[in-house]
Image (cartoon, rainbow, N blue to C red; front, side, top):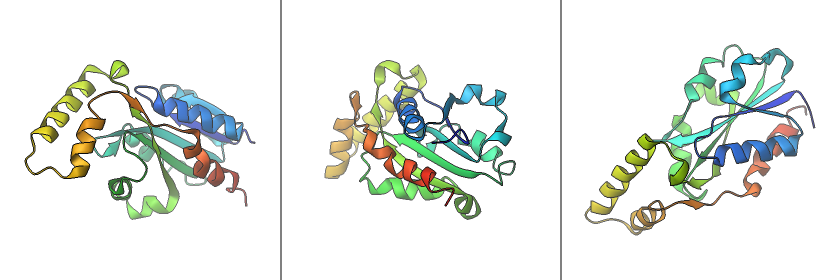
Length: 178
């Protein structure tokens, strides 16, 4: 579609990278890992799409993106977050509102893409955090049915990613020139 759009991603276990590649293929635009972003000349882009993974209710490396907001005042901006929750989870919308200030929400379009868990590719710290969270969840008295399902679901690796979840991002990007 355009070389004026770039997808920059930060991926730990591969889900965010997979979505970045799908988005860049659909938009026919450049796609780079976050650790390569320092070499880029952002003046050449009209739109920047940043993707990263959910981390303790936030987005990993979102500080990098937020630190650049003032420099990118003339750009169309979007963020997509990849997490292990199904898209129907009502907690996602609540979390997304907390990722940015009201002023930042006016500048940045936010999307969520379900990914999954890949324990084999997780860092040791992330595995430990997840193990502790699962233990606490399983030990909780009076668990809701949703908490029981969550504890079972996140106890092992799984993949709920699907190309269909890029459709709102691609649609947003295709309409930035309208």
